Every structure is written in structure tokens, then in C-alpha cells.
Length: 261
Image (spheres, rainbow, N blue to C red):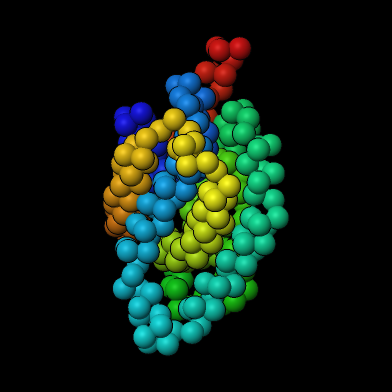
């Protein structure tokens, strides 16, 4: 269970911030390897790890926003969070239980991967964050709401929306992470409140408390590093490697699905 906890944590931390969909990967792990579903409590621990990672990485930015009274940027972040907050509250539970088909995940990985490639390849990357207006923040927020569908990717959708609007890759990524913070905080709190209904003996669905803590640390560390190196990479690099990964993974899913039928 310790090994599985580490892998779950690493996948959550890396895939949460790279444009490859953490939800899809966490669904695929037990599908490919027949691992036990760790359950809600363990999932909360993983999301808490990535939440702390993103808060700690951008702590200085949040301090500057409030200290220097960057109210326009704060308003842009809040506005961008509204669509995902509303749709997430209304549909997330239904979507998580009904859109878990491996073939559907393969389709969304591949199709949205091509969307990322086309937008990244043909749109100009010139605008800076200071040039963003409220209408653009709403459009990016609508992109974030698409991430409720497994295989889309929250970071992928918001970064792609930002790039489609003409923003630089790193700028689009940074704004994507800033608007992800309150959404992730709200989602973690929303899920954590459900823990009160679970018996203590079944909190981690067969996983030990130690395994949950290790998964949390793996998600925190890998998440922090994923943010750091993605932002550094996007100063000059494109999204093409992530597109290739998404398409290759989609092909593997399809082959595995029909082989095991």
C-alpha cells in the first residue's frame, strides 16, 4: 500500500499542474493495474498536498496582490473562478460517476490534445497579464469548467484558453495556477466535510494513515516541482511534448481496452 500511495501522490502532484489531466490518470491507475480505490479520505489527502503546493509556490504573489492592492488582478481571478465554481457544485458528482469510461477518456485526451496543439501552434503569444480584461477572464474561467470532464485537464483548458486569447505561454500558465488556487481550496473543503460521515476505521479504504501521509507528501513535493519546472520550461518551450504524451496515452488506453475485452 505504501508503494501505491507514493504513485498515487506523484501522479496527483504532476498531472494536476501539467496539461495531461490528473482526474484521468487517477481513474486509469486502478484500471490498468487493478489497484484498490483508496477512497474519499485518501483523495482528500492527495488534493490537500497539491493545494499546499500551489499556495506555497505562489505565496509571494498572493501577498503582493493584497499588499500592493492589485484589486483588478484579484477581481480577474474571482471572475474566472465563478463558472467552474457554479458548474462544479452542480455537476461534479454526476460527472465523476458517469464519465469514467476508458474510451471516453482516450477520446478527450486525444481530441483536446489536438486542440492544445493547434491553439499553441497558430495563435500569437504576445499579451501580458496586465493587459487582461474581465471578458477574457470569464472566457478562461469557462475553459476551467470544461476540466470537470476527465481527460480535459484543468490546467490544459485554462492555459489553452489564455493562449487562444493571445497571452504568452508562461502568462497563461501563471494565471491558470492563480485561478486554480481558490477552486482547489473550495473543492478540498467541500470534499473534506464529507469525511465526518465516514467511520474512522474505514477512513482510508484499506490504506493506512502512514500511507495517506506519504501520498500527501508525494503530491505536495511533486506538485511544487511540477509548477516550478513547467513555468521555467514555458519561457521558451511549447506544449507539443504534452500533446504527444496525451495522444500516445490515448492509443495505449484503446489498445488495452480491446485486448482485455
